[in-house]
Length: 240
Image 1 (cartoon, rainbow, N blue to C red):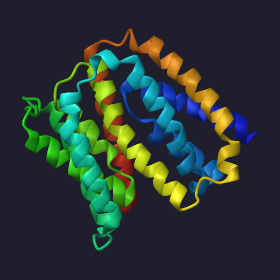
Image 2 (cartoon, rainbow, N blue to C red; image 1 turned 135 degrees about the horizontal axis):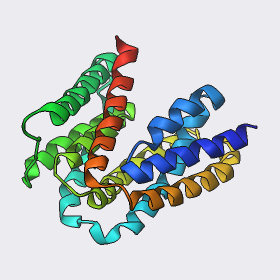
Image 3 (cartoon, helix red, strand yellow; image 1 turned 45 degrees about the vertical axis):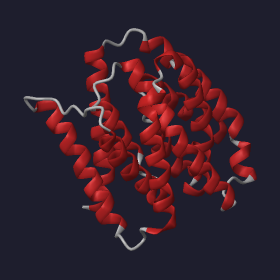
């Protein structure tokens, strides 16, 4: 029974992720943690995220800009190492509450402000957002929203947004999987669920690719903001 439910969960998660460019972990973790527990859900989501991100990158590879990625990926790796090495002296609840407030403030400003937040091509923005995301990812596995905000503020078209987000996410995913391997979290139970999870993910990816062709940029804009708002609330509410 769990196997079917897990496959359906990853189908839905992959559909949303393929359509919006992110969000699979948000959906999958919310459903799977009560079903199979955090210790199984977390590594399973990570090892399914990797092939999903690779497929999206391959699909939109012609839109990929290595020049745009270089600085933020390096900054992300540095930040992740800092986060893993130790910012444990910072209270997790305070940090994640601040992250939730930042995301919600960005959503409100972007949705209702007179002017859109647009980041230029300067490397300082790539360094700032990359290091910040890496630190959060390394310490608390919560760096994804920062990357989404960064690319959303670059004014990319949907296809370019999707592929650049995946190409940055995939670096963080490798780190997360490595940590799970080193800690022995990828157990026989996790592997036993991989087959149904992968099938569900592939179906969700294919469905998402079909729907993505018909999503206009303005609809995509509000889809991204909506998912960011949910992420912000998810970070904020448990700490109130």
